[in-house]
Image (cartoon, rainbow, N blue to C red):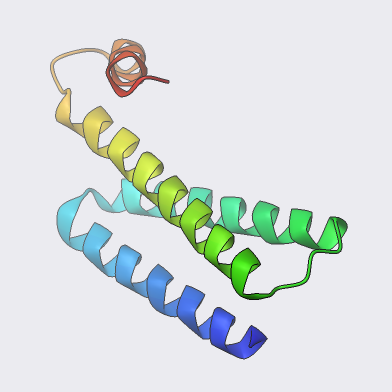
Length: 101
């Protein structure tokens, strides 16, 4: 079971990275990739800290939380890149206002 989870996470990460490279600026890809890796490490670390077994229900919750974090980070970075007519600080403020953060 753990080997299957690692292979699924690796396949998901490679798919997200490949689609990001085709759609967005390469610097944003690197930042999004590291953000998602840190979220994954945090989730797995908290599961270890709480001594949570990696059963099917934990895997489903883990997959959903990673999927939502990927979705949120990608939408934030995409919106930040789409607002080009403002300085960076204003673009960040506009992005967070529009995205509901």
